[in-house]
View (cartoon, helix red, strand yellow):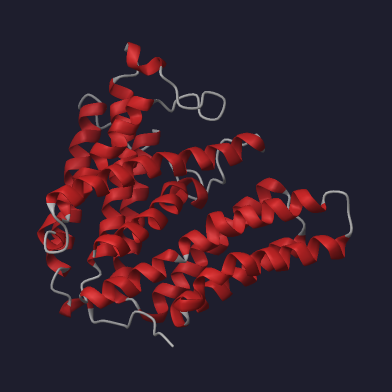
Length: 316
């Protein structure tokens, strides 16, 4: 029987101050970048989408820092809240019947428990999802049973199974040291990948490179050049964490990691767009100013956390 990543006094974490300094520097540089994009005008800077995103990022970063540094049961509660909000948005968008929704919330709790205390049984979860949703579909005996079963299984794998890898990554991190460095690596690289894709995409939006769309019917603005921005942004996030992760990875492994994060951040974003496009919605909700909903914010993470975890299993 495994144990959850234990509670740690943040003041005893050796990377507490370096992480806080880096976060502050990132937001200072982000503010100057925001000013440059606004051509030096402060008026109305917080009212446009970029300004709202910046303020939201401050809140998100603060919440993430607090929960990851403290750990223990508190971070599991936080993870369950994030899962529940994402499930709620997906259920509201898709109008999934109540019985499936209740099962998704219950399975979120079960999955966090299993990944925390019985990680050796973690890979049985998708089969359990299938058995439960299949039973519900048969019990309901309606014509949309297969569609609801398929959607519920998709949401279970997409949201619950994927996010549960944060707990597994916490276990892996604790086996190496007590710094939570791998969790902070995700915390830096995914947002920077998203920002890199946005900035590079914007820079090349009026060039011939912009015509190379990845999936025009799913996300008209997503281009292959944007993936380069994803990768560059992820690499910047890795460089920010270099001071601690250089003990774990060679420079070649860091480059591979940046490519993996960049590629799958883009895949995650497109998966979210695929879901929203099917149900004809722009954002999953309006919970986070400038970002949309929880699903809009974590869609890249839902892919990245999984592939990064298994990459780390191989190289560490």
